[in-house]
Image (cartoon, rainbow, N blue to C red):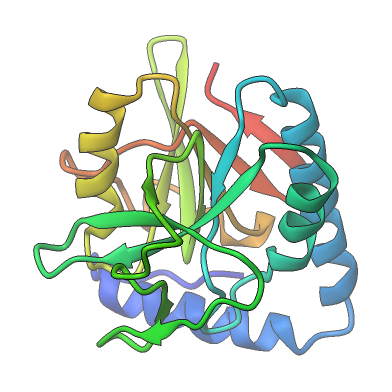
Amino acid sequence: MVHMHGNSPKSLRQDLLAQRKQFAGSAGYAKTQEAVVTSLTHLLAKHDAQIQSVALYYPIQDELDLRPALLAWADSKTGKELALPFGRPDKHLDFYVWQKDDLLIPSRHGVPEPDPNNPRRPQITPDCILIPCVGWSQSKVGDKTYYWRLGYGGGYFDRTLAQLRKAKPSLLCVGIGFDWQRLDDAQWQSQTHDEPLDAMLTESGLVITD
């Protein structure tokens, strides 16, 4: 259960990360991870024509590791590519093609990143971006439901999505998380600069913005 916090996203974030660490060591974790991966496989199959390239993330701090499932997906189909994000100094992300044994370089935040100067791994704009969530919420505006991500607070994804969506309106941005990370309005509310997710993927399946 997520505890209440005045209005400090920082302490809420610390709480959620501590809970995730505990959850990752729990007995039910493997089963939950499997359920999320199954949901992801369904998503990729359903949107097969739309999704040629997927940007994933390198798992840190007990994030779900989707690499094996995505490598299997890319291997089993022709023309499918995977990409990893590279954080620029201006706090935008660029995505570079990633393959299994590529050498990665730790960023200043300690996140392994692709080498932007590798001539064999071009920069691409992915069709689908998978974004790990520390927490998430949903809100209704009229009859439309929006999904929001509480991240690490760097703002990289919000800046990047705002830009990429202009360039590629069909972009599919999917938050990756767990049911228990869902926050209510009393705990956390998205801010005006937050970019909504197109869908949220948890062990319960995929919920897509209608």
